[in-house]
Image 1 (cartoon, helix red, strand yellow):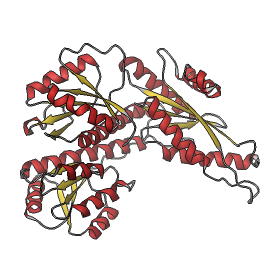
Image 2 (image 1 turned 45 degrees about the vertical axis):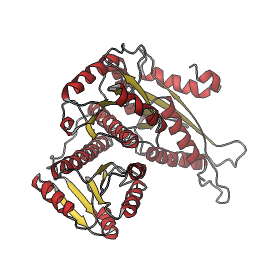
Image 3 (image 1 turned 90 degrees about the vertical axis):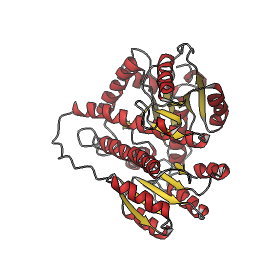
Image 4 (image 1 turned 90 degrees about the horizontal axis):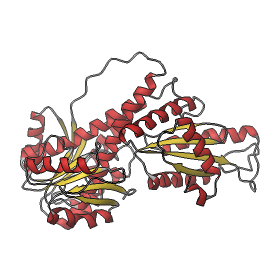
Length: 438
């Protein structure tokens, strides 16, 4: 389900309000906005805008009202007729009637993508402060590639013909075995599953992809032979990104596949831009994390963004210790364990997060567009995995564990990066009741 996110909902009461309660069951706290809703008194991070509309003028009206209520850029999802697809200022279109699970999944995916792109831009700017490097020649972006899985039905033939006319590459796998062979060998921008008569097989493939870290973000679309709402609910619960019912035209099928494929390509580009910032100028080679100087610069840039346009973020501070009641390893073994913890920490964070070791036993991580609940989730995950990992000591028969304490803080107006880091270290030493007030 994912951690809770706040979203804005705009539309006629009978369209918008009816879905709010259902979205909240999916961990999306929805705030319904009308044309006359006054501006918000308190700044809050909203992950997406969900607009129920019938025409372009309603979209324009909605964007204006939402901007008055809470200024700032965030992904916008339109729910309505086909004419809304491709409207300026809309990041995604979902045909009505849209299921809450589909809206929630799309909102989360677009919020994550927007976060990655924003952080990639800012991190590249900070990286440039550490010296320019020779940039490799830009490679031509390959054409979109889509994997089709299932029987060679007339709908598949129509989809293949329409997509290839746009320059996209369509590869067909007529069994689940050959499909996973293809998925193992290369990357695809989207996967289309023919669920006609084989719904269970399609669901199994989608679920398997969502359990695979490399395939997790690859969009999955179903070619459906009915409009069964109960089956659609299960499909989205299994990780399906979109369902193409029988009445969908060839052109609309193509547009919906390419829209999701385009989001996948954007995510791949943002990840590559973030990875490009990891080089000897910015890294602590011994830990694989960013060095403390770079993280301080990165944090300062985020603080400037926070002051200017309410760019939200949190700082996670972690301390690693060997429990007193445990076998006390020698200094070399403890240092080796902390370096191993650093490698674990890097892989437990998102690509857009930035972590560094700031002294012998303290680590910090900048978590963009993350509020208190999200920080708590990250801290719990890191602590749980670290504390169940046995590290090798000087005595092979006496492995030991690291105890991890963690706290998260949010920025204050006018605060510098150094001051925020110092406040985070102080907060970690406080009693939990006092820490909440720090």
